[in-house]
Image 1 (spheres, one colour):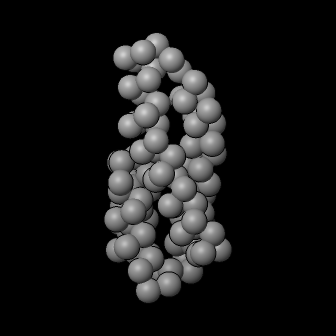
Image 2 (cartoon, one colour):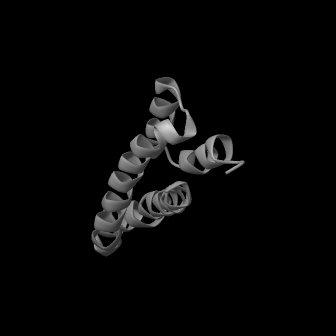
Amino acid sequence: MIKTFKIIALLEGISFILLIVIGLPLKYNWENDIMVKLMGYPHGFLAIAYVVLAILIKKELKWTYKDLIIVLICSLIPFATFWMSKKYLRDL
C-alpha cells in the first residue's frame, strides 16, 4: 500500500501542477476550459485517493497525528507532495 501511496502522491502533485500552470491560464486568459475539464476529475480522484491512503498507512508508518496533518496539508499546496514523498517516504 505504501508503494501505491507513493505513486498516487506523485500523480496528484503532477495533476495539481498541470491544472495550475496550464489549466487555469487557458481558462481565465483564453476562455478555454478544456484542460480544467480533462484534468479536474482525475485530479479530484487522485486527491481523494491521496487522503484515504495517507489515513490508511498512518499506523503502518507510525506517523503521529501531527505528521498525518502535515501529509494531508501537502495535498493542498503545489509541489508539496513531492517534498512530502522525500521527507516521509524516503527510505521506503
